[in-house]
Image 1: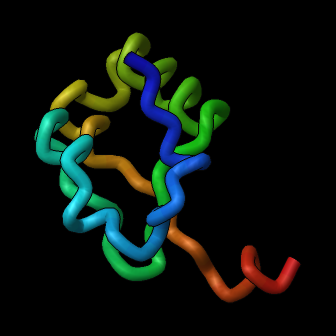
Image 2: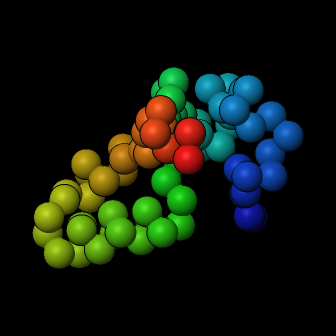
Length: 72
């Protein structure tokens, strides 16, 4: 099964009720937060492999929108 949040018709409106998050036991991103993109996820995985971040901590990482990022 392939789940693509980017194509979800309810994205950013119903993430808190999404069954995918429940199945994966992941909390949805909070206000101003977004899921990591592929490049960010790869960077986090590299940090885990290098021992700079624990796997447990890495599971909760999200990207945070800032005013500068949204303006540019």
